[in-house]
Image 1 (spheres, helix red, strand yellow):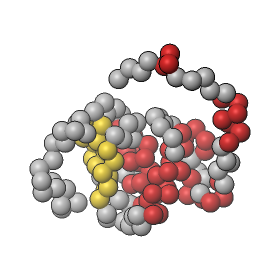
Image 2: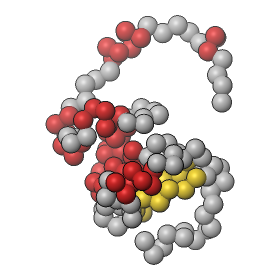
Image 3: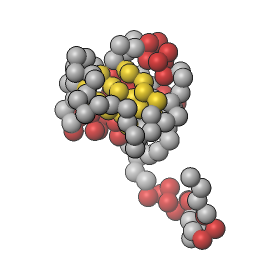
Amino acid sequence: MKFDLASWPAVDLQRVRYTFQEVPLSAYADLASYGRAGIHEGLQGQGGLFLARDMAQLLALRHGMRVLDLGCGYGATALYLAKNFGVHVIAVDEELPASLAKRAAHSGVGELVSAVSADAKALPFPSSLPYANM
């Protein structure tokens, strides 16, 4: 997908940066072991693992639950959710990195992360989920 940015208004990035609030890292103790590079690894959009952690708490994720990570990209969120919440993650992306399964195994959550290469508009799942026995 290409965007023609010629007609977009000019943005003062310095001014925009001043509007961002500092993330209170003390509120994200479970991310302390990741470091800045780990939190933002493979990040394609805003939020990264901070957003994943907030959503996991809002959804009250518990060990054994199933999560669909649609548009998982590099898979950082899938690995984080599996490792920190013990959930089974079906990580779906059209351009799924071949390294995801290996990184999941290396992180100790290989059995919790299922990588599926698919277009979000044409998921390869039947109406009854094939992961019922997870």
